[in-house]
Length: 244
Image 1 (cartoon, rainbow, N blue to C red):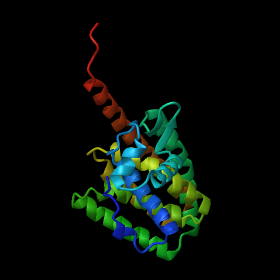
Image 2: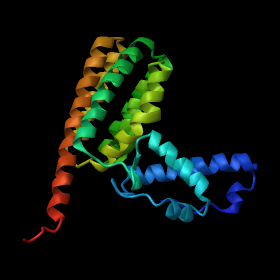
Image 3: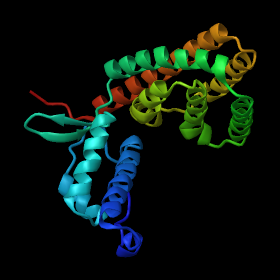
Image 4: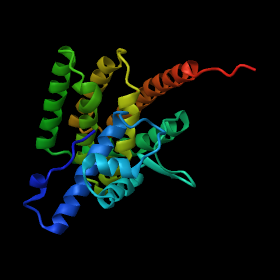
């Protein structure tokens, strides 16, 4: 995870600024650890241990965990306490169902509202994704694909869509995608799907852009669900069996 924050890191801030900075830094580091599985899905969170790891008081740590609850990366279980969100097929499908509806809307709006600068940025991102994939870089599979969707959502021009998807839904989505990615041919197909979506947006064809985005997200859902089921089967097989 992260390193303890030194006095030098905070020397230039007022007491109020220090508190805000601490919360934000701890939030990002715990968030990243959850998404990457360094804090295992379903595991109990020890607030005191986290505070000691970062060399800070429990106040900023508690605030960061509260924000992570809003992002659904952390859940509160009665009589047990805070836990990292578990990965389940049911929640995955619920998540993708909502994502599909909102991103199709964002894609349709982007086709109507995207600026030339935003469109050029999309083309440039697509070229960098193709280059990364050809070089065997994992960037596209982990972060680059998310960047593609971020740009389209921002190009929609709808602030509430942006807050719902980027500010909330996408943190949990990244957790599923990061931990359920395999080495299949999916990235190659996804790149081709990205290109067709950008072409439809460039042609200002909102209906086609939305349709292509819906199909793209459904393919991603199927791939992620398949991998999650494989991981769950492996975990179950590794557990010792009770002998009667």
